[in-house]
Image (cartoon, rainbow over all chains, first blue to last red; front, top):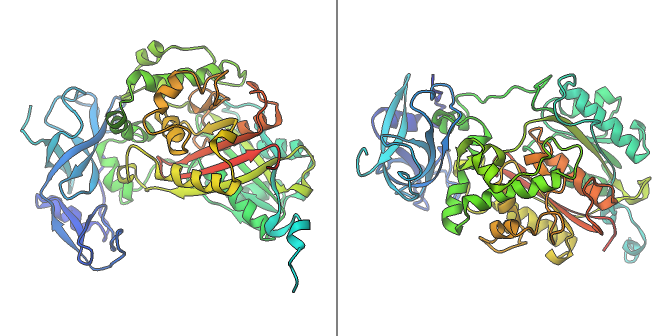
Length: 135
Length: 390
């Protein structure tokens, strides 16, 4: 079975968002910059006045590997792409690329992507697929 | 108080010349299922005390990492230290310990520090548990994506580096080829047979673009160091000319720029500045090589070559035996040994080269630089070591 993240008070709004079909990240009300991963103060300016906002869900492929030694729950479907994507808002996160055959040729860097969500137990995990739709 | 002319004549306190006065590894490295983690620490410690011509009673400071930690190691050795350092920031920790020990000795907190490493990385005897809670940062934001340890995550930066710089798959493979040439000369290395780029590219894919031969070994072993002031050294000392420490991000997905390590750059700049050396002064280099791309980042981020040039530099043989910048001359983590926290072995090889007693000895080494990585580009430290004062 695939690993299921367990929210903490700091991260609960993120996981509440994915359950609602939204990708939520934080934004500083002082310097107005976005950031990720969830934490209670802005890493850019140090302000504690921050808000949760809905990200567009659009991203580009920053880098990835195609993993040939599967983690528990990843045995089906062959080698899979562990990726880092850059959201339109400028922050990066790890994810999987899905709904496309996983080959280097299909996955040029900077490929346009959009978020989808996969249910894992009580939690929904954000994954990304090519913005042009399934190949 | 008149201190106007004291700094010229003393070699204690803030001006003390700090040296590595003892250095040794465990009797064997490799597959050691009969050794517990603690016993690897203790064997390395005893070998190092013998190398230094010291006894445990000379030691008043202790530094080590994680399992089993400084209290168990000191207690098992019968040492009651007046200074302890348990800094655990991954495989670079032992470079951090050297820097911290130097500061503690100069501050008068202790006089002689024993730094130990032992890790049953392969056999997992008396070893710490792997695994992070599902509510940890990585448990929430990396492990759900099927990360299986460093081979599927430390490697994540490489494709972006290749796109930005033009590094080829063949050049990445050349890193493993070059290091195997050094391992070929080292009887203690786990893998010694010479290999070609084709061999590397034909080895099985672990995590594209990385093949098995571009990933480090997983072994058992240990090593230790004694750091003290020059007066207390009882053998030909290795001088610590400079050191730096730095960090980037706690998860590789949050690394500032996938094409350069901030930790490598900042720790290197600090170490070179303290030592007052330039790149031309460096005779020998050790760069932590958990995977084949890491020495490429190290060469560029320390400033030995310009951005995007390291792949060609290695492929042209400049880091191989006979080359102008001998790199990872024990064979490195790719071919010599890699217990999990390899930094100790990088320091050990630099000490051997500076003493003139390495298996693959480079002629005339006077200045050696060691760059340690911790986690996945998470922490970094650099040491400038020399067998003479400037």
